[in-house]
Amino acid sequence: MEAATTEPVYRPATPEVGARRAQLAPAVNEAFENFSRAVFAEGALPEKTKQLIAVAVAHVTQCPYCIQGHTRLAQRKGNGPEEIMEAIWVAAEMRAGGAYAHSALALQAMGETAPR
Image (cartoon, rainbow, N blue to C red; front, side, top):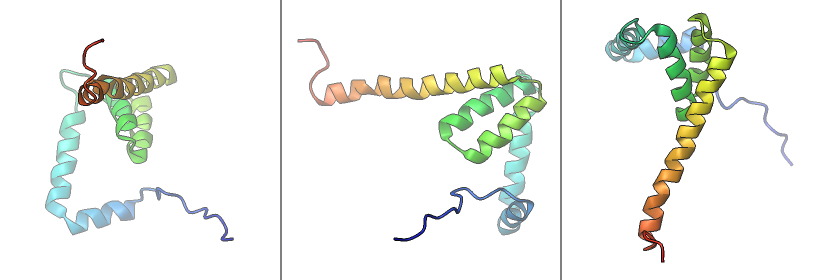
């Protein structure tokens, strides 16, 4: 029997990884960074709110790097643990709601769209 691996599924994000990504596609990398700065800049929504939205979306997209990074940024922008957790619960409800709503497609496929 083989020993269980302790290798993490997601390796830590490092400056070296970022540098290599930029080296391999510098124009696209720069465009993405500019886009990101523009999206998270103060605008109609304050940065605090944008980071809270990012935490929720990161949980729906299930990106561990985004979850960690945007949770820290949300805290730095003034969001407390309760606000962050509530945003995560909103994301969870929306994800579950999508499955619930899409059950209409299964009901239709089974010919069960109207009560008998």
